[in-house]
Length: 278
Image (tube, rainbow, N blue to C red; front, side):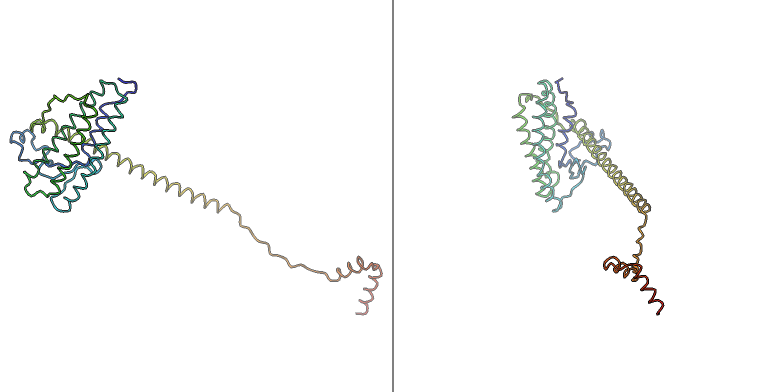
């Protein structure tokens, strides 16, 4: 193993997810022989005779042959190339941390799965209209576009990692091999992706609910604290301003004695005389 250990299976799972994302497909049941149908015993029936899209975020869904869906499918598939190109950059980055032996294993497995999706895309591009006579021209174009993106990605992988690819190795993509080996693997991997997405969504909802609960609890505490503080506040009572009381006689006495130097005894005699007259 390299010094910075990398789990190759985890890397491959992450890279393979791109193949499923925004992938359209159509599998007519009439291509299956009775012996194959007997062996399947009803398994995967939901995958047959229906126009489907796979999406790592939205899951598996149907689309019809009508004008509206046909227009949307063309736009939907249009972003596929961007995701495949990101895979190329991820491979380049990961390989820098791997030994030559590990790179060989990684590229060999990636190439095999890429060839599978390329084969599926090629078959549908060529045969979808054959088994669905009135297939909308935009949907036919979407299958061709999807194949074009896988073609382009396959060329990039061969150019960049050709030294690690055995081009003489042949893969068995016959109908029986596809149905009993690859289809089950494709379905299993996609279920794994969807289960993780569902779990991730539930975790986010749980975190959101806990945040709302915490915010509500904090709000109650703030309100309780505010109410307590209000109760602890002592009311400020304003004292009524008293009117100034003035003793006019006292004021006169002060002025005469302090300012005009009138003898206080003489002043008192004068006041006594005035009181007798009154």
